[in-house]
Length: 154
Length: 345
Image 1 (spheres, chains in turn cyan, green):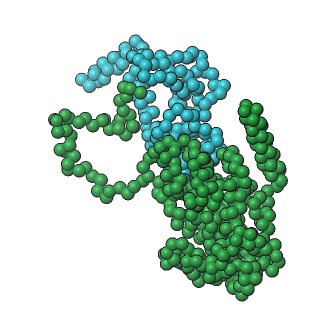
Image 2 (image 1 turned 135 degrees about the horizontal axis):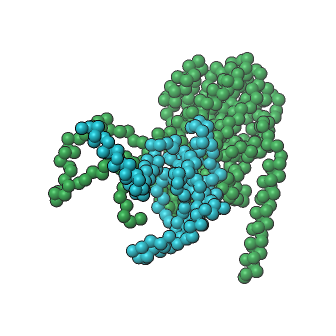
Image 3 (image 1 turned 120 degrees about the vertical axis):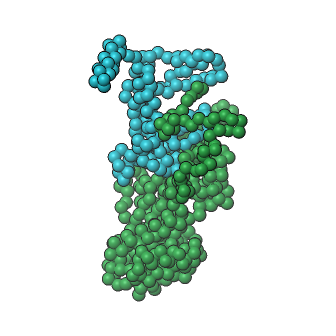
């Protein structure tokens, strides 16, 4: 089994038509059709000062939403990939578009660091700590420090 | 056959363009800030954001600031699945009761639309009425109704109603109306409502009664203001979704109305459900969506937590399954950060 990302890296920097994305607090049991957010949703988004700066309000199927514009974490790019046939052994993902920010929505709760989404971002730091390449000199530095602390302790 | 199709298409295009020009000319005219006749009611409502509530207070006649007044409260459009609910108040000096009767503010349920419209117009144009009767309405947007009822801590329609009624009374007080007596029409149990009102406004003589609009002319006047406003709000409803329905013919909004029924079956979007003219919190709307739109699940609304939340004793026996497998609990850090192993995605 393999997964191919079937696009040119240069396309990632093509931000001419960034996608407008919404991160919704609901599980939507449907696939395929593109939701017409311009018709039903975007023109209802309003900034309401009561909840603090930058907090947006809207509703989805009558459920009150509170949202905020968020950017992908630093050093990361936002991309949307699409797969035509996930049942194949050699899977192929194509680039639908890129985004610089998206609107994160909570169900009747001001977005905060306590949200599941923001908590999961810790995974990125963990990955960084575990997988970032280490320079030879850094290892030597670390060894040196260890020896020094050993000496101090004895 | 093809030719006919094309013709039809052209016709549709033309109709669309017409609609656009109508909307544009409307927007060019300065929207009225005052409702001083039946004619100005529609344009006033149309100029407001229909996803939010709108409050309007008429000018307070000078006599209402000096002489003790009675004030009536009633609502329109509580039951329908479509459109706003409107709360209305009307007030006049206790001694001017005759004026209400002269205007024809009798049992408002007995009046037809035409009669209500003409009473509303007279109430705002004739000197003998404007000099002693004032009124106010709050148009509660269907968008606000749905989102109040679907909050994490749910706010029932009764609470929305009472807040609106008390808000309007307060605004009348703030505008200088010298209120002595308050009459309220209610659908629910009058006692509880009366108690709540007395707590908030202890200095008034408050009467809450079922069918008060047929007993008290001042409630009847309030009822007419509310009903006429609700009817016009539907007539001038502009869909922010860009939908055009000829003459805004979506029926009365009652689930039994065949026109409303058709609207509710035809206007379903698989993701968003309905345009926000619809009250999503009505079971009629929910049921129609359950059949025809994608199922959508939100976080559970906050429920009351059990009082005892400490570690259960039985926890110590639960770590292994019947077959002897040891269940491993995910490291707390990962659990709290919603992180999990993913192999397939």
